[in-house]
Length: 95
Image (tube, rainbow, N blue to C red; front, side, top):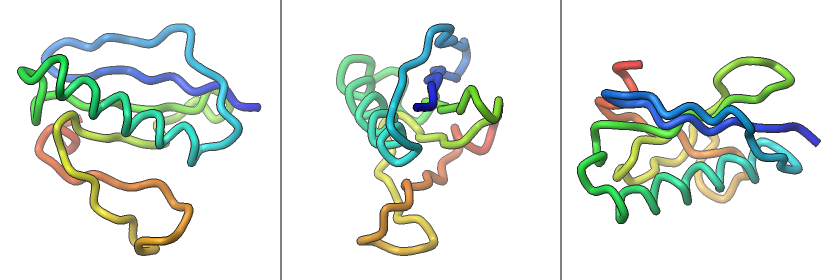
């Protein structure tokens, strides 16, 4: 099973050096969404100023990004699919 890292990127970056193991990318993307939602409640100052970036250690590249405090937009495939959501916000585009 692949290991995913979840970095919080904004004015300062909080790097996830350990990562978590998930069955696949969709499950890890749901975790990233939940993490961003929790951070928007616990740290409202991060809303629209930071994002959670998920990377897959096997491929060593960014696989998903969700802005903290943003509402997810359906992926190109549309709702009802297993594809992860993509977020389009100012915070995500600055990366």
